[in-house]
Length: 370
Image 1 (tube, rainbow, N blue to C red):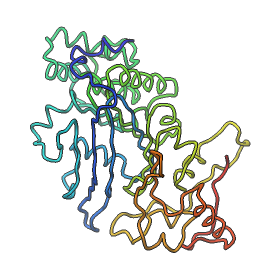
Image 2 (image 1 turned 30 degrees about the vertical axis):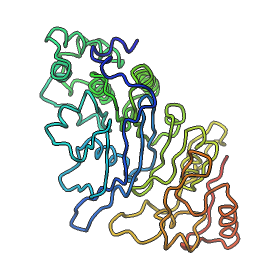
Image 3 (image 1 turned 180 degrees about the vertical axis):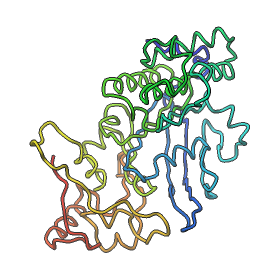
């Protein structure tokens, strides 16, 4: 279905593709806990342009969802955005915007599809009332027009018998149905930037494809920016213009999507790609896995956070933290002293392979299966 039917105000939100939309600089988010400060996001720089999609990838605990919630200004009470952090949306510094102003930004300018569809909807209100409230508040539609638009949106995201579902409550729907309703809510006012945090988690494979096609169509035709947060590297491979890989609250690699998959530079990115199941794998094959666990981000030790799990780790990695730097002449950035595919990186892996262990004391391993 064409995007022209999504929302009457869509034309007002159209932007020229490539126009700077979101600019995040040195974003640091810490949480106060009895054990100490949890450094969930540690100095992230990120840009999203109108009409472009950026994929944020990383395992659980890497800081992806906290990053998205910081942009939306919906962090928990014990969260602190550190001084010096900048979040600029369409030229506006969101760190200085009042909660009242935020209310007017949500929906029309910024929207989010949350990871958990079970708790994203109000259980005591019907699906229709939750959709029409948004449409009437932001688009000033009449009650009848809002109902008509809400029913069409439900059909747009693949909900059967949308007119019937309009009068039902969230508990009447399956988890997958509820997630489709949250997506309908998010796109109802054609936002300039949509943050999708695992938007297809509860959906079957066929519906996943439909929802991702829908988001791509909306982005392309409206000039909407898209931040797609996912564990599924296959999703970002075909749906995004740029991919940023996060680990321990930092971006460790960022590049145009084709470039990233063709020339991975960070050992963590390579490990994530190697863990993807392939039809060419022998039956009953164990997927390669990283040793150890993600680091605890309370009073972290000096050095690279990935060093204890990295097959290329050298003594320098244990005392210095690498910064995200661009490869000369490219848009490919990596935070690693010994990147893959470089003489330094090859020498580090060969030295550790010969020694049988890394500088961090980890037994040398490889995830290479491609």
